[in-house]
Image 1 (cartoon, rainbow, N blue to C red):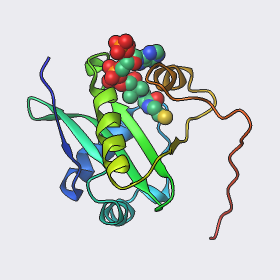
Image 2 (cartoon, protein in one colour):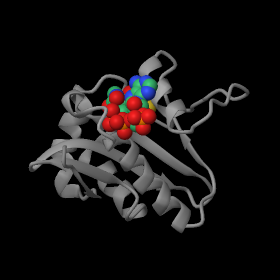
Image 3 (tube, rainbow, N blue to C red):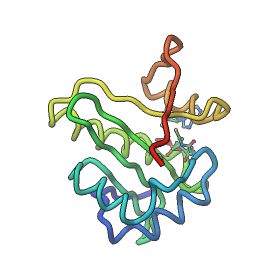
Image 4 (cartoon, rainbow, N blue to C red):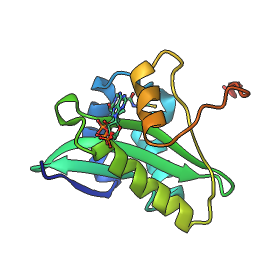
Length: 140
Ligand SMILES: CC(C)(COP(=O)(O)OP(=O)(O)OC[C@H]1O[C@@H](n2cnc3c(N)ncnc32)[C@H](O)[C@@H]1OP(=O)(O)O)[C@@H](O)C(=O)NCCC(=O)NCCS
């Protein structure tokens, strides 16, 4: 199965948002409006990617850095195209871009009940940080 991967642009937003909305394990919020994604892409050029099969968007991933560590968000592949290496390649492209920017460690956020997602990340070399927990503060 042939797929292509290229950098995500804001023109991809509607298709990417639709994919994320339909994908289990992806949590969308007010941080995912087109304005916020535009800002994210502008701050992190060349680090977010989309995958296509025959012109149809089938996968997406946001990648970025705060200048210190890398972060990946919202990795999603359409169910019928899973198991073909698309997820792996999206991650590989983002990690290569982060490495090029001098980043030497990358983090992800995974829902604790996303067993399939966790299994994927472990299969492709990521490790769980059992000594850490995530805390947040709302500035609204
Ligand atoms: C997780 C996800 C992105 C994987 O995408 P994918 O394109 O199917 O993954 P790949 O085909 O690139 O798989 C890469 C390797 O991981 C393995 N793998 C894929 N999904 C797996 C899973 N759920 N459990 C264990 N291994 C898995 C593949 O077999 C492959 O191994 P191989 O190289 O030995 O063949 C996809 O299943 C998805 O969109 N899931 C729902 C959204 C989600 O949970 N995203 C993560 C949020 S943190």
